[in-house]
Amino acid sequence: MMEDKLNLTKTWDKTFPKSNQVEHRKVTFHTRYGLTLAADMYTPKTYEGKLAAIAISGPFGAVKEQASGLYAQTLAERGFLTIAFDPSYTGESSGFPRNVASPDINTEDFLAAVDFLSVQENVDPEKIGILGICGFGGMALNAAALDTRIKATITSTMYDMTRVNANGYFDEEDNEESRYEKRKAMSLQRTLDYKNNDYAHAGALPDEAPEQAPQYLIDYIDYYRTKRGYHPRSQGNGKGWNVTGCQSFMNMPILQYSNEIRSAVLMIHGEKAHSVYFTKDAYANMINDNKYTENKELLIIPGAVHTDLYDQTDIIPFDTITDFYQTYLK
Image 1 (cartoon, one colour):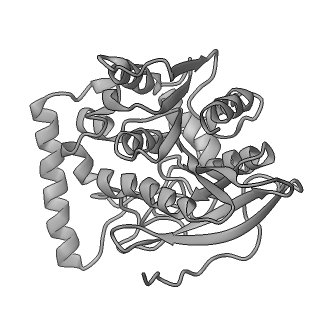
Image 2: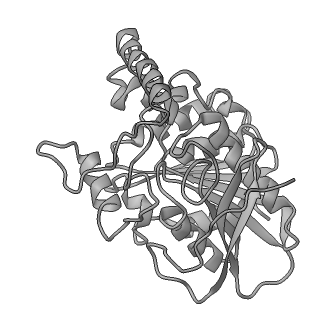
């Protein structure tokens, strides 16, 4: 299948230092929708036989040079072949218009990553896992409910993007009137975009949090708008998402059959994260009437906030993550 030729950076432009324990190279792969995704592949420098492999993406609005790359490189240091990929329409991946998201297409991004890993000569196709961060935690769990090739899934500081778009934060807009007003605004914006032959952008995060900003906004700014996590291709910078970029999330809930997932799942979240209710509720729904609960785990990290699990290596439970994949990818 033909893939789009992508303009991939050749320099190390990550938000974390390069490891001397792994080999790194850029790769591309295609989705079932004809999109070409860009990824960083991390491979242990020394290994024997075929490797267990893990595909990683997120946070929602981030790029592979940020948190997903950090997870990927760290897990490669621990013996796994990993890829961190940019979702469709973002980062260095293909797709136009830019800066849009879809529960279907972004779930497919994970499935396509599994396609790619399954045919690598140095990968054991029976030992493939995935890991999703923030909004891509929800996509990863959704992918696990669809693809039986996925043997182990981890969600880290998960968002259910369909829920938050339909109901607002903390379900405070979970009523018909609120959803109608959002639908009306999106519908009018679509007409304006078509008339202007361009897509309006929601804009990047501010450089500083406004007075009385919620803690999660302060945390996001501290990651995306400072040296800690800034990257020019991230949605937290530049133009941000399209105004209509997440329209379909309002009427296409994911995780409908998560309680039929037979493979192993570990869900990780910070105790103090504003978003912890997404993981707690998704975990409860996943194990409800599920005949395969022995391989399902919930891990709440004491004192951690949402963005701590992006890049704080003293808080991210990499030992637990490693043990989980070693147990279920064997």
